[in-house]
Image 1 (cartoon, chains in turn brown, purple):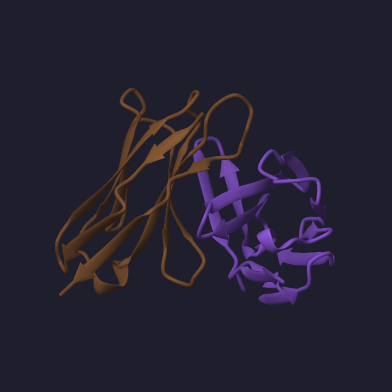
Image 2 (cartoon, rainbow over the protein chains, first blue to last red):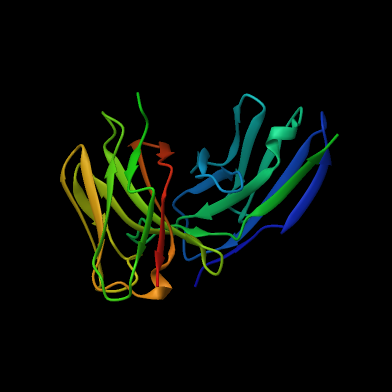
Length: 111
Length: 115
């Protein structure tokens, strides 16, 4: 089976940097996704990593290590509006496109 | 662009009734996804279309669920007959996939309540 682990909740201070980790155990690997979801709203796609390394998009960066089954989402210069749930999802190999989602990390940014 | 459009935004129905959810993807996107989200199960991908063709429907929970994409600008997700446990928010997303690059844009969702 597939297993995705992320912390349930994190808190951070406005202006700081926060790293949200995601570890996975899957039967093969064919891509990892990060999404942001504010309460009561639709998810927003943040990143897709299929190769090892760091990908940067403005204040958000996503890192992947396939050998370690590990990814993180790095948020810099935190803003209050970054308070949201962050979902990690992993797609296993073997022909299925359907990813397995983690339960999400609720990030609370305080002044 | 108006983004991904879903209708209806809210649906309340009685158990046993047929429910049809609709989605208009962003023009030019070649991928379309239907998701379901509940407190109990979290976010789940139900089915993925590429160029209007269903590529993977292994996430569809039961035969009561079916999805179609008759053309590049329209897709439906149908539940027949509906059951109370189908109550959830259903999201449609469209996107593109080229090599190692992939993007997705979500619609606002349809909140379904089956009584």
